[in-house]
Image (cartoon, rainbow, N blue to C red; front, top):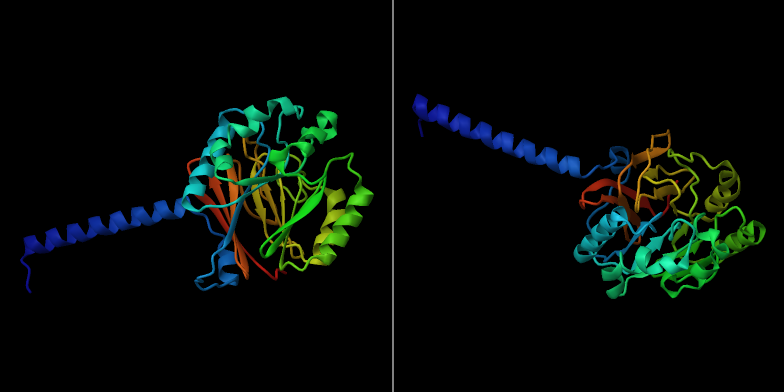
Amino acid sequence: MRFNRRQFIALSSFSALCLAFLTSKLNKQSASSSVNVEEAKSVKYTSTSEIPLRFVSVADTGTGDKGQYAVAQAMTRYYKRKPYKLVVLAGDNIYNNGEIEKINAVFERPYQELLSQGVKFQACLGNHDIRTDNGEPQVRYPGFNMQGRYYTFGQDLVQFFALDTNHNADWKTQLTWLDKELSRSKAPWKIVFGHHQIYSSGSYGLNQPFIKTLSPIFQKHGVQLYINGHDHDYERTRSINGTTYLTCGAGAGTRPVGASAWTARAKSELSFAAFELYSDRLEISGIDTKSVIFDKGIIPVKSI
C-alpha cells in the first residue's frame, strides 16, 4: 500500500504519540517498583505453581496516630489482594511507656480489620515497651501471642525465633537458648526477629555488640533473615555472611536514613514489609502507604 505525503505525516505523528504513551507507562511502572538489579542478575527463578507462605512485618507502631493508621490501612489493602495469616510485630508496640491500658487505641483499633480476619500478630518487646513493669503486661497480652520474652514458633517451611534485644535481657541464658534452638531446627528457613538493629544506616547505626554476639550465631546456623525496628525507616541489606538484615521501623513515623556499603535499598517512608516464602526463595517487598512497591529483593534458601 502506498501513502501520499499527508497520510505519511499523519501516520508518523500517530506512531510518535504511541511511543510516547508507552514510554511514559513504562517509566511509571519502573518508579513504582525498585528492583535490585545486581540481585536479579545473580539469581534466576522460573515461575512456579507452588503457593507461597505470605506474611508481613512492621515495627515502632504503637502511637495510635494517623501515621500508624495509614500503614495499617495499606497492610489491609495488601491482605485483600494477597491474604496472609501472620504479622511479625518487631517491638515498640505501645508508645511512649508500654502502658497496656492503651492497647485498644494503639493496636486493636488500627488493626481491627486484620484481627477480625484471624490474622495473627507475633510480637517482641522494644525499648519503650519495657518502661512499664519491664514489659510483662505485653508478654501476657493474648493479642501479641508471646510465649515468653523470647520464644520460637514454626509455620510450614519456616521457623521463627523472637528475641528480647533490650539492655536488661537475660543475655547469657537467651544466647544459649538461641544457639540450642537453631541447632535443633529442621526447618529449611530460619528467621530471627528482635526490636534493635544490627546493621543499619539510620539514626542508631551499626550495633557492634550484636555484630559480635548475634551475627556469628546466625552464620553458624544458616539464618537467612533478621527483622528489626528501632530505626524508623526501611532498610534491606545485601547478604552479610549469609544473613539479610531488614529494618522495618516506619510503622507510624519516620526518621532519615542513609546508605552504606551493605545497603541494597533504604527509604525514609511510612511502610511495611511483605514476604512470599517458597521452598527455594524468599521474596521481600517494601510497600508504602499508597500501596506502591518501592523495593523488591530475593533471598535464596541457601544464601552466601
